[in-house]
Image (cartoon, rainbow, N blue to C red; front, side, top):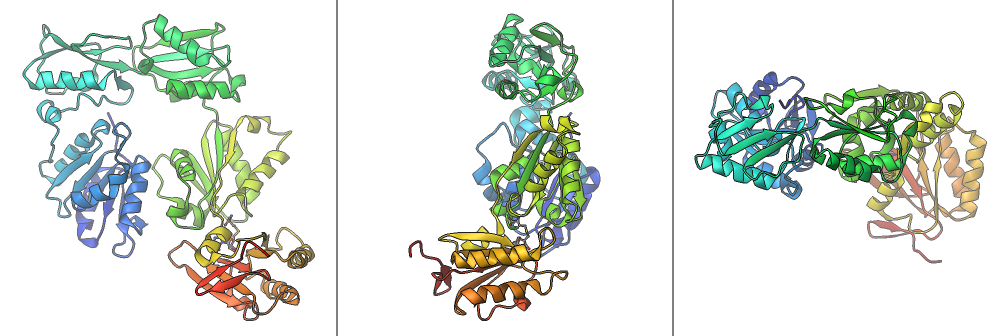
Length: 539
Ligand code: SAH
């Protein structure tokens, strides 16, 4: 049956806390999410709408302790895809009402019944088939797939109209359902991996077929489909595509698995025939066959606010089994599901973190490495490639890992956008940190950038360990640029504590900046208009 262990119980204020904790006690690993300004919960959020949308997108079951209307309005923009939605329920703050809203296919009514039982009330179930039979016939459990939703709906209306049904095949989850059963009935629930066009049956396919391919080329999808057809097996009964280990980096296989909607696994046990379909008596869990190709995805969170994280990066986080990064960023990137492993490390252990990421990914795990901003700007993407480069000879298995680097919104871009368009013409980005490069290189680059009249965006301007360098750097800039040159200071941009400030180069000094500040020094052309700072696109 479905499990709801990673439930998100979302509250808006303290008055719902007691009910929230009662529900939490019933579900292992569930978390109470609370509005940061009003309540102290397990996980804090700032914006209710954005938070529940993110949970929904992550497929997390949501129990919101507020009015159904608030939840519906918040989720309205995401409700198009009926197949993929997690269960969402509204529960009255005092626990007196449990209202399943969406997620019929993922067991919202099962969850509603469990919560209602915990609170000692009756759930507000509105699904007629469910009410009558005590189960949603159209939402079979994991490992099974409904052959045809339209036929399914007709079948349920026929039952509701008074007909009875037989059950053919093994359907253990229906043992306790309140179905009108009759061995001579016209209608049948048929559990079979085979194609079945009988209009009077509710056909449910157990995912019990596995396709083993030896010859790997562009036609894998077609050959698997042909082989299934030959055995009269439904494509929905396919549980996995398995190929030999040595074919791990072959893109055609990944395309085929995607086209067939099944996980791709690798094993040295693939038979020597071109293609073999095996059919088990029970649904097959693909995770138990061989292993997956590991992936390592390097993402950037943007400057801080979830709204500035790209959807591709969010999707990578949701899919991750292991998440690695500096503690501060990892906390920003949460919440995580109970099945995700989070590896927090110190900010300075970048290369070690990159190696660890490759080790996990080459075991077949889906690994995400998290940076702030853009991962390629003074961040983890370069460290990951450095680890790969240095491990080249010793770790050939790291090259079989599917590596991707996703772009993010870098702090200079976020700061520039808040201020106007200071980077509107040629500019450069520089890190003032001399941890990894000698100070004289930094000075030389600043002089050249000044001579080229580039706008300069400074990362890592100043830290306790580097107290004098910033003022020294700005003295060099002042040798070349007018004291009236606009300078933008963005601190904690995109985060709750954000401050923006514009000063002149003459006023600028180290006391105005720290490690959470982005400093953008204008060129000779940079100007202000009211509150805005911009660099025109012409000379
Ligand atoms: N990869 C990151 C940069 C990491 S270096 C990116 O692309 O943004 C860390 C430096 O980035 C900090 O010292 C600070 O100068 C800057 N920075 C990162 N996030 C910031 C934010 N939200 N506001 C202002 N500056 C930020």
